[in-house]
Image: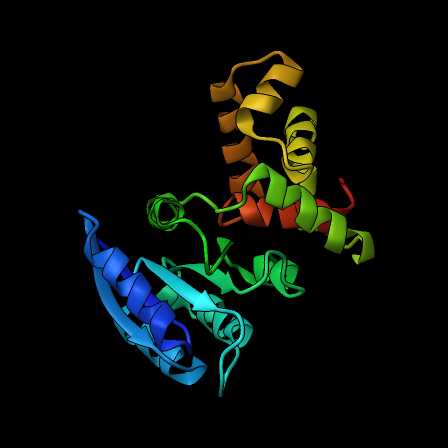
Length: 214
């Protein structure tokens, strides 16, 4: 059973997500919060599998909640999906760098929201190729290169695939470009994540940007 918490200051958003979650088999609604402080307390006490967290909330914004949850070893297994009103929020890159597993626009299709629960709970990240490209285009251009621990452990093939991941390419697209199987791509991506200590594909993109691989 995947336990989900919703944190948003808009009652209608919370109600809509709660109703949607309660209709999905294998998913349990584990609580809701209307501000950042309440959200942090709820997450730390319940330790849900997935959290839908609004970026902008009163008392404590979503980014600060994310920072504190990411720094809490007891919440290491909590996966957070940031919610935003806009298609590309100026805080998105910072959220991914801090540890978010992805982000969604609040008016996303219900099927996308439910898919997000399963993808993130399974250790994946919610960054479609098109969204990844736009995040990189907008934010990476202003990000200075910085050392990424253990980057030297990557093989040349893993670095190459990491560059493709950071460009927004899907596993199938990378496989077609390099003339290898999608399964091989997934293996290289997984190994790169393990070597760099990336929680998911989203953080792998961030590491690629920070290290200058892009």
